[in-house]
Image (cartoon, rainbow, N blue to C red):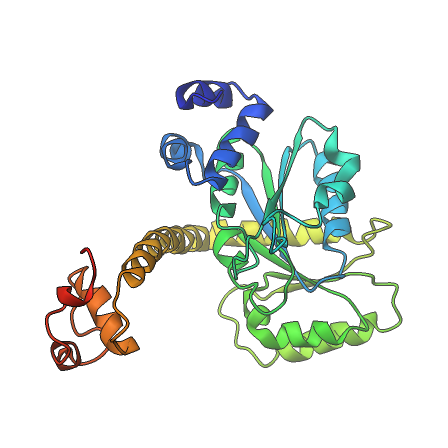
Length: 325
């Protein structure tokens, strides 16, 4: 399966190892041909993103949700994006440990991915992994993010339905609501509903929701006790209701088109960023930042994008300041 053609054949035959290998190729930056070949098979899965502050019980909630979905006979793909070690760049938490009860289920495919410092709470290869699980035929793809709080907004660009999990008695919950996550939630989940302050947190969420003017879908508010599986059926009902609303109103197409644009943008910017870094490394030391930025942009035919070109011309010929270009 190291051969791309053989990998595709195994993938289309439904071999789980082929799906794992395909995701690994995408993580290493070698998955473009696979995605190109399999992309026509995507768009069928219900994709659900789960985010929230650390300690809220996202992994336990994921496990309970998987059990509920499997009880309905649906297949599930799970992507757990863990924080990365700053030294090894590998995943620290390994959420598969907390999903052991599903690990031996052949209809549940679980993949932990390291965020590698990616700011949106997601790994850069997460969108590829979602596409591959979708193309593989998974009915539901669940993406669980790092849970770093204020940079979780990107999950809304990957998932059809975004769940924001919060826990009572934590100041983090209110801070998360203030950080822009309020606007991306399709379903709010108050986990650990047996906590004495659970009702207070629900009131705070409703109060903050009243400050926004929702155009169309109004986020559902569900309380759960994931350890005991309580409320998970209502959570799934809210997910299904949101999916139905997306399809009935045509919002699903618009949402996926926006996700497509975001993905293309990220791929293009990632490639450009690498080339810009190479160009910066070749600049001389006698430039100010604005002049240097103009020089780099000029290499791509962009002129006057940062400051007046006179600043660049004042430093002489553009190419003279870029060694080896």
